Image (spheres, rainbow, N blue to C red):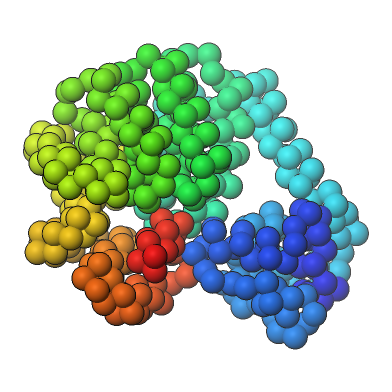
Length: 367
């Protein structure tokens, strides 16, 4: 079986059109793949390269080796009937869940270690890879929700899972953020309750999506505690971005000032975790906020401050800063220059490092 025929069979087993498959890859990897290109693959006019083979492996839930090896391709659909791909994945997840219930599953300490690892992985891995892995963890942990600490772990996993969906998808991301907040309440841990809501608020506010939900979750976090914390810091900047996008300049600047005061007490030394907000990451938040407000001089200062301490292992965040500069160009009247700057920044970042949030920022510049 040639690669084009297998792609067509796998796509059909998911019930997807060629356009839907292209959309799934674009959403997961920030690419600009078209329906026509999928059609060319399926007709054998050209073959996907290594990056797109990995992308297809991820979104179609098929081992990469099957796509790469002609011998495996010939036997795959016979051995695992094409229409049974999704049920096979579901079967594996169900088995993992029941096994966890019967065997006890990971301990509370092991879940904390997993969360720490995911916090680091999120900063450098693609959304699709994280989404698939965390989905499996959620199936396991939901069988173990017998203690407040396990509810805490589940809430933080749900928050991470929500982040792998585009914020503009009001159904998926928002549903998971709300469930994460409810799970955090079950934990009874005030810090987790605030952090989950704050992380959701900054994710939605930064992406410029579901601003009403961002405000609600941020307000809940602020009502739960006024003690300086990373969760409160995230909540304040989530509200600040929502205010900026609504045109509330004074409100956004007041929240920025409040956020900087919270950071002075609660800022973290950890540099490369999604659970941390070090100096460079605070300035990534502020760079986009100030760019949206048209505060160009302050925005450039925030960008310089971020770049001075940004770890070299996190190139995606340097791209964020370049997109903020593209937004500033577009807002100043040079829309073509802003779009070109953004396109050059995205081209310089390896496609596997692209994220949903970067694509949404590009869309904001284009709009």
